[in-house]
Length: 446
Image (tube, rainbow, N blue to C red; front, side):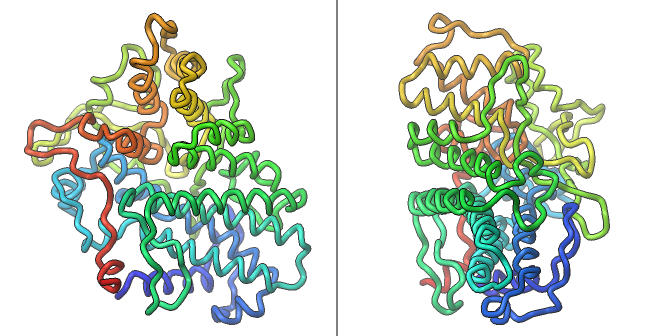
């Protein structure tokens, strides 16, 4: 079955049978056809599909073979030792190569993002045609939908990198859109986020549907703009548009009060244990932390409290660890989408790349002191333009540990993947620049 066909089926399933989840009330659509929804949408159906975009974007984030774990493995943050269920956790993820024909590895983080992107396109058509909603309500939904759509495209960029991916989603399945480059995808994401901001500015005082608890503090159109600008700042960094990144950060929720740090301030994926909801499975017993996280840390770095040692080490095919993560203590623990600590480090990176070394050093030291409880590095005697990138990447490694593949993405951006830890006990290397595009997607284009 073609991946585009799978995306179509997923879209219909989400359209017709969203269930209560993420502490959100999503009513049944009484099984309308796709054509009916686009041509004769009801306000309740439109609002429910908007809510469903959060469900779709959260899917595969916090499962053992999901986004956080698998990108963590590639970035040598984590191991998944569940080889009894799937030996590819070692043979493919750690020893390589990644297989474009493998349905849950080569296909991971492709079908679901594109299904959600398609749902956002369907929603935007429905909003244009719906009666019984005010213009501000429609604008709020448009701004929300395009922001979530941008996040889904960003999953494709982060996992596929230079392999790229299609931008055109939702046409005939026999007329597949071309594979766009990474630069084209990032440009499209940037445009979506800017269009979303424009919509949100006319979106009134509240959204006409419920957002999850993970959006607390950012659940009105005006405050959601701050989240939108935070994501845009991350994208601007990836595009190497560093002054633009600083401008976006100024419109975000970045906060650096020493007396009130709020490093955890941000937007999160929410999880729940109620009927029909989704659990955070990142405390799976087979998931271990890479031991280099401890050996490479500075003494007394309080971010090591994100880890815990276990009595008996797990060993699989020469890979060994007796360290586990302790970030997500409950099956309902939220997972960050973006938070203040990342924004401060993004500002440090932007200033470093603009040769504003003193400003970059100031933010790096802020994170060292407030997050790590480490001493400042004096500028320029201990921290200067010759070593500031090394220090920045080190702080990002520990501040954003096991939150969403940041280590793998950052080291790849700076062409330093071979500087990540290579397990010498087996003949392996950091081979994985990116996930391949699934063969079901490429073969029809040949």
